[in-house]
Length: 202
Image (tube, rainbow, N blue to C red):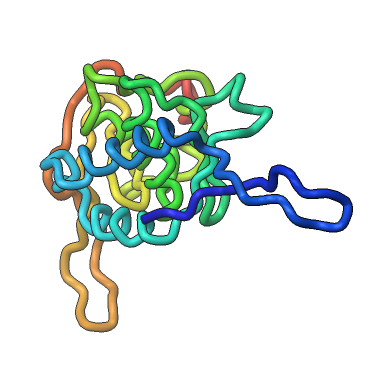
């Protein structure tokens, strides 16, 4: 189970008081239930090694629900701590999965892709705003093709809106091998992003 961020209530200048979790009981239950609902879903099978990382992270991640920035964002990740602001029925699962993928070292592309694969039509949001720039700046080109971007867990084609799990071909006990597309996770027109001159985003 995760660790829940706490604050101290009561006491005096000389100490005392007691620790209170920043996430209410209802928020804790919503977050825990959301994790249990998605962790064994087949939508995660497309992303090699991600599920095992999510399971390991869940055992030691610290979760907070209270922050001044909660008025303007759904969640945030920093190190081994995640902030979950939106615990509504439709968004708690997508936000929790998104931030846990970041905690597993995933880029914005990885987090958005996992969120879309598991929650398309049921709480996921399409890429928007600075997501597109992060998709490019945080990833590398696949075999020199700027329109195919490689994250930690996924490969994305910006022309077709297709996303595949990231796989490795060849190599040996000591690593190496070539990055290739694994199973196709999804295709969405909402994930198409065309380029302008010089390889820049339009």
